[in-house]
Length: 435
Image (cartoon, rainbow, N blue to C red; front, top):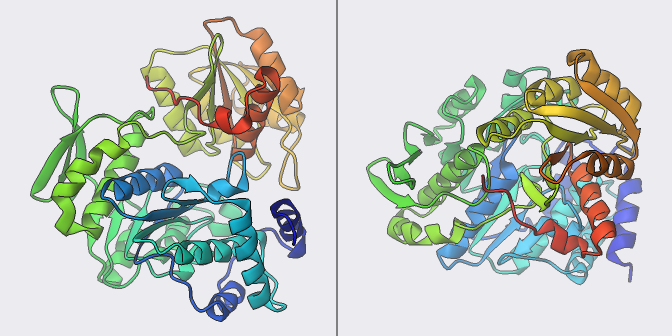
């Protein structure tokens, strides 16, 4: 029997393209597997930013209602098993290997990408767990993503921005068309944005999908006593602010509350009680503080939308003069990220990003320097070298921000583990900043 590590190494090299959008090949294998439905109720989450946090809020609320809930997300930070959870816990290596073996038999010569193969395995695992609710995160786009093989009972579309233009189209409208592909006829759609792009609204209208917009059908607003009030049409309840930092987390929470209320309208009062389930929820890699003196804060963001949210949080907390360790894939908008972060960054330490889509530190530094010419920008080399340089440069009261990708955050956690002898899973669970 292959180990999980051996399986993942095989899947990384088997298909000629790492990203190969389309539902024909994976759809054929899905049918051979018996069209596994992950749970009695399914909520699918697409968008550019905030998907992972929204999934986490949805799962916490579902569990707070006493349901058996599972999630599927991607990518992971430390271990592949993070991608699939059952009742809040990551699945085991053996569970994944068993599912991989089932997909391999059903595949029978059909070539699948790493993502397609592992997503089909996730469907099997979730189905076999006998869940009440499954929360699925779209990997890329929506319309042609393997997750979209499953018809959701509720769709959530988080904020849409420019990302993956090589695959999804050159502008917001084109990308929105792909995200809107998860909408189903006469099935509720919850939008995090107050004004989502027109293609999303048009798709919902064409499919007669009940539309729930932030600020119209539902909202989440601060109260005079520092609490929050969630409202959905004529019903409302109050709750505490979440532990995760950034005003954008209120957007994610609002959408999750709305989606659960739409999925289970008969349980609105119980949902009000389940609010305690999200009070201390934290998701690794989202404005997460890994260390202090100096503070090391990591964020998996990799586009201008995420960078703007991070910069807004730092500015709102009064922190400037940040040292930024930046490592990004070559196809990511480094220039737009630099422009969004530059109001709070004092020094940029650019690091290598490995892999076929990566780029060397020197190239990244040139891209940053091209849009913030007056900034202090250094090309350091490896991520470990950049972390060493950042901590060496920082005083005890300074802050180091590590930003640019899931891989970048994973590397920072590994660096910290080497320097503190802390287990990487423990490091990934350290406190999120809370302002």
